[in-house]
Length: 115
Image (cartoon, rainbow, N blue to C red; front, side):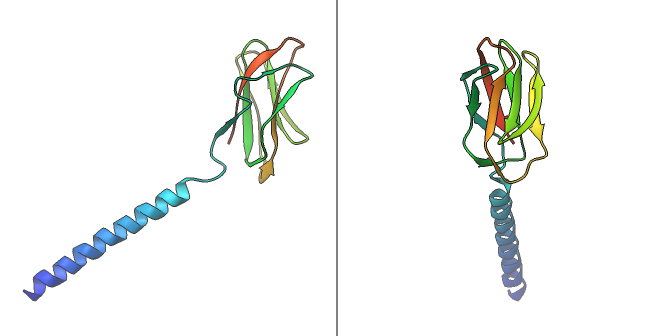
């Protein structure tokens, strides 16, 4: 009888430990620097930038639909890429204000994400 009580307590402790581990893993898995879109569906060109809201990020990527696009944050410039290819900026830390800009005078729709 005493053996059954110890075994039940052991199993209950194991289940509680697994549940606690799962909750901690879920809590740590959602960081503020996870990918988040900005400027979605907006048109930009080489003089009109689209600015995202300030956020914690380590980089950004931008793709232009009909012309090339450039990626940046605050006063930092990243790369520019031809139509349909990914322009990016990385190596950042902390809070930044991401932006997207076109490479031509013609307007282009952009898809942009921070990470």
